[in-house]
Amino acid sequence: MRRKGRPRALRGVAAAAAAAMVAAAAAGCGPETLSSRDDGRINIITTTGILADIARNVAGGRANVASLVPEGGDPHTYEPTLHDVRNVVYADVAFSNYMLLEEHNVIKTLDANLDPDVPNISLAEESVKYAAEVIPLVENVNLDTVWLGLRVRGSGSEYGADRSSDFLLSATDADGPGDLISYLTGSFGDTDIYFDSHDGFDAATGYRDDTATLPAQAHTHMSWAFTKPGVYHLDLAASVKTDDDAKPVAIGSARFTFAVGVDPYSAGVENPIVVNAGHADLTVDADTKQLYVLHDPSGGGEATQKEYAADRVVIEVPNKALTEIPGDPAYRFLGHAGDRIYQLPQAVLGKHVHGEIDPHLWQNVRNVEAYAKAMRDVLIKADPDGATTYTKNTADYVDKLDDLDSYLKTTIKKIPKSRRHLITTHDAFAYLADAYGLSVSGFVTPNPSTEPSLADRRKLTDTIRNLHVPAVFLEPNLRSRASTLMQIAREEHVEVCTLYGDAFDRHVHTYIDMMRANADELRRCLS
Image (cartoon, rainbow, N blue to C red; front, side):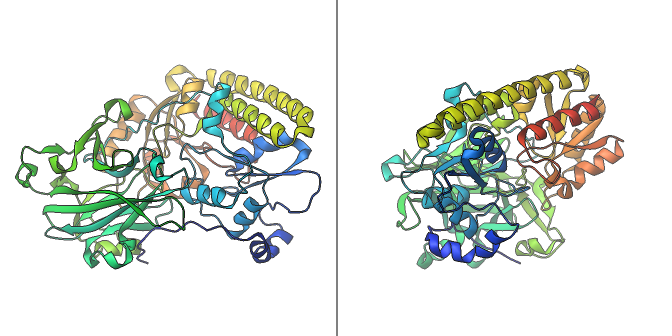
């Protein structure tokens, strides 16, 4: 089904109404449920199962703990339910990972429904005070064309914006010889359309159906499709909504130029800066109130990013970007299956909004020790009578984490250095590699809207052959979408193994078990 527009965040819901609607779930074996009844324990809400497990180890029997994202769920894409709202309403303490890990609606649900006096802690940021080590998120996917997305820079603090505020990028007009469509492909092949010139742009609705929503300091991936060759222009206007009930406040606007299948130097821009490789974002700067192109030609992150005024840039969509519309009905909004269009591909599958720091800190066990200590101190302030318990539990848990850290180091050290190469479908293991002596040698992301090019397949095949890689790794929840990687693995007679990233499953229920399973699987498959 053709879907246009972005999902909206849940608003604050009264506890009584939410409780009535989820009573059945609470009575059965459904999701964990926090209670308004005073049983002598405090209620802790976390965003992910990994954080919930850490909290249970720190709090012990003094707390009820529930996670918003269920077992097996993806924190990048999970959409909260009324049951989640109810749990948030009853929470005494809230822990999120943040650093833009969680789907924005998860954060909005948390922030909108917590009592203002409830501690609301972003652990990735807080854990730095406890010696957690963070590393930059460097996106080094190599594409045949520019990788084009959207970005919000700046905090927007002068507008009163915070982490749950919405920055809106709205397409207000477009021209060109054909249709211009930008869209996102989710982890399971579903599609969300951001902008579509085919049916015009409706000012009367505030361009609701041609608006992308991002949190502050965030970047998102997307695909851009053009139905005919020629020069296109896209007008974007940026605004900010500090909360769901606020009216959007205008920030600025700009026009962006695309040369599709034609010479970019003949696109009508004097002495143009042609953007045709690396990563680029159409960017709204909430602090300077400008829209511009932020270009990263080498994938090095902030160190290599350059700002270019929108009226100086031509974004090239070359003839090699020609591709056929997939047969999947989810892509009918692009045209008829088999028709040729020009497309800048999304490259990384899924709704993957992020910032400049890699948020997957827990893949380094030492960082989880910092998480536990941060939780301990927050819980002591919230429940001073439990200080002795929280201190002892944390010390015991840190001892177990020390053993786990040693286990990973010892186990992975048994893998020959020449074989410590990670090839996977999710670029989420930089901390694991950095902490335990592995090398992220490549990843191929399944994207049903565009098949990997022959060059991509050759590159991955050469990597496997040249490095004598004996196995590739998939997260359990991505296995069904990883046909390309699995096919290449079969052709090269290498094993397909499991590596846990963001979530538990029916086989692994705790953080310690997850990381031990990862260590054992790495040794088994790579040795």
